[in-house]
Structure formats: C-alpha cells, structure tokens
Image (cartoon, rainbow, N blue to C red; front, side, top):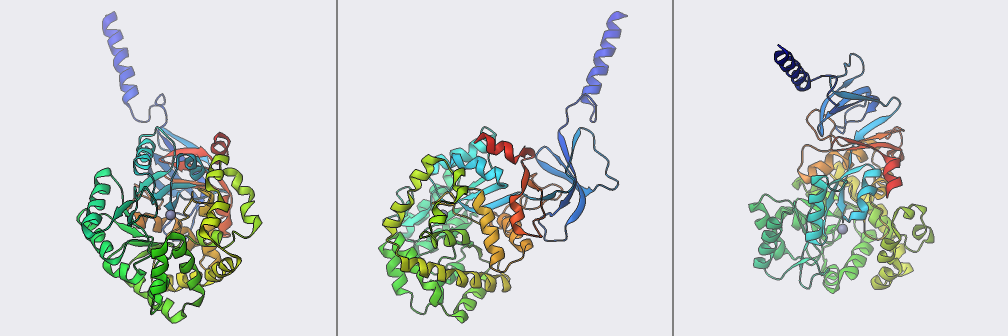
Amino acid sequence: MRLTHSFAIACLSLTIAAMPGCRRAPPDGIALVGATLVDGSGGPPLPDAAIVVRRGRIESVGTRAGFKLPPRTRQVNVPGRWIIPGLIDAHAHVEPWALPRYLAWGVTTVRDLHGQIDSILHLRREVNLGAVRGPRIYSAGAMIDGLPTTYPDALGANTPHDARKAVDRLVNAGADLIKVYTRVDPTLLQAVLDEARTFNMRVTGHLGLVDAVTASREGINSIEHLSGIPEACLADASSLNAAHYRGFFAGWTAFERSWAGLDSAALERVAKALAHQGTMLVPTLVLHETFSRLDDPAVLQDTMLRAVPELQQRRWNVPDMVRRAGWTDEDYLAFRAARPRQDEFLRLFAAAGGRFATGTDASNQLLIPGYSEHRELELLVAAGFSPRDALLAATRNGALILGVDSLGLIAPGKAADLVVLTRDPLADIRNTLSIDQVMVRGLLLRADSIRKAW
Ligand SMILES: [Zn+2]
C-alpha cells in the first residue's frame, strides 16, 4: 500500500515535470510586448507588437491585442520602445576585443573579410559553441592576393593553379566565403570564381587590377569599398593599374583621387551594369569618410575612441599609417572631393535596382567595432537614402550578401537577433544609437551591462 502510494506520487511528479506549461518548469521563452516593430521587411512598422522568442528562434509575431502569454514564457514589457532586427556589419576584421563592442552597439552578425585564418576560425567556433559571447561570425578566413601579397597572412597566388589551390585550402579550412584583394588580376580572378563555383562559395573583392564591370561580368558576388568603379569608368585605367601594382597605399590613393574627375554618364553606365548583373556592394562610406579627414584633429581625438582599448589604439598607430601612405593636404582635399561622387554613384546604383549592405572595415584604424555601423547608417542617409532604406542595408541586405535567409528579418522561424531602441529609428537614423537591449541567439542583454563589463 505504502509502496503503491509512493509510486503514484513519483509518477505524478514525473508527469508534472514533463508537462509543457507546468508552472514548475523554468521559462524557455521570452515575450517582448508593447514596442513598435520595424521587422526588416521594409513594410510599415507594427505598433504595440508582441514577439515571442524561444530557443534562439522567433516563435511568433503579433500585436498585444488578443495576445496570450504562452506557457513557459517570461513577459518583458517594452512599451514606448522600437524593435529592429540585429544589425549586420558586412565588412569587418574581427578581433576578440571587438566582440562585446559589436553586441553593445546592436551588431549581432559580422562578415569577417580577412584575418589570421586559424585565429578567426577558432574565434568563430568559440562563439558558435557559446564559450565566448559575441555576434555571429561569417568569415572569409584569409584573403587571396596576387604576389607579392599585400599582407603577410594572405594566401598568395601567381598562377590560376595557385588561385584554385588557395580556394581549396579555404574551403577545407571552413571559410564561409572567399575574398580576393587588389593584386588579383583578371586571370587569377577567373580561376578563383570558377573554383569557388564548384563549392557554391560566394566571392567578394576589394578590387585593384580588375575593374568592377569585368569582375561583375565574370560572376563576382559582391564588391567592397566601391573598388574597381573608377577603373571601370575610365577609358584608360592604366595609370590606376600601375598604382595598384606599386603597392596598396599607392593604389588606394590613386583610386580615391580619381573619383572627383569621373564622368557622370560613365558612373551611370557602371552603376547600371553592376545592378543588372545583381552584384552587391558594400560601400564602406565610413572608411572613405574617416580617411578623408585624417588631417582634422577632431577625428583623432573623437571621444568615442575611448571605447577602443589603449593597446589597440597604439597598434593602430595612425601617424605611422599616414607616413607609410604618404598622404598630403592635397590628398585629403581630393579624398573629400571623392565623397559626393561616391554618394552619387550609390544613388545611381540603387536607382538601377542595385542592392548594397552596410560595412565598416572595423577594426581598422579609427573604425570602432559596432559604433562605426551607426556612422555608416548616418552616411547613407546623408547620401540621400531614407532611414528605412539605410536600415534595410544593415539588415535584409546584409543577410542577402551572406546568403543566409534566417537573418535580417523578425518573423516566425528566423533567428532571434534583435535590438530594442528607446527612440524611433525611422524618424531619425541616429536613433539606432539609442540602444536599450540587444538579443543575440535568443539571449536578451542590456547594452549598459555589456559596456560595464568590457
Ligand atoms: Zn577590410
């Protein structure tokens, strides 16, 4: 009798523990209730939203009217707030110190475009396993460059055979995409694209010796920094090519200086050609803008730089970079004159149906991981795009460029990466900085507590 009784109790407790919705079971979901949702589709915002998230995924999206809290779900009220998808930085060079900065500034995915291959792929694994907290990392591993390579940790290629081997090596190492650099010529690029196609790998380029239209026609998926565009506009790009052969800074300087003199009809022709091929762009306006103002002490003394560890700032060594680049006052004037033409090009590209994604080039000199993404958004709006379109560049288009359909959108089944803002980002794009909370993989974090911990 006693035995039967205890058995019954044990059964009952087991049943209760196994029952979904049992009050004793800990919550495994979060409902964010009362905010205005800007879901990343480009459609109108949804006021008074109720978003349920469970086990790293969005479970449901609706409105508060008629909302019933599902079992095992903790309700978090966020009235008067705005919710946007987690931001994507589509041009990053990720280092461990940058991870909490990305999260605190609402960047939940980064597209890493070159680093020390073992370190970056190890870091990606650590983040995926949850051993280290950070944004999702998609990485190109090490870039492929012509010989001699611009950076010592790039994979150098002299022949099409070398180029194919470099792609194979990156595929075997587990890279998510392939990046080619300025010293890759048309023959090498063809081999890279052909080999990458075998593995269904996307290829992006910081172009130098190949112009943007040629790269686009050959099937490159995306182009970084608006590179290769002046080369495609000019009837004779031989002086730019010669500069790219001389070295990285010579090439960059000549490229940047050429923008102001480009013909508008040529810009339009190139914009249409790239848009019609479906080649995506990551313009990194924040990089062009920052490097065009290195003669302004305010840029070097920006208080935001306090977010960057001192050791890193010493490694940046901006005066040394300027010395190596040999930039003069005249160069800075030309770089600043390039900016309106780059904006004009981006407008022509978008008008032709082209798509672009936000990218920053952090953590290169003066480009603060996470924060620079908001500067890029602001520069896109200054270039003539609406806050809505700028946000789409940082969410939907970032996912498109990665070829990942679970990101960039807040909808059932998508990854639970989102940002809770205190002010309306569609009213003023600078309001994307008013970050209250950040959710990555379904984990809700307070921005100020991430900041306190770095
Ligand atoms: Zn870069």
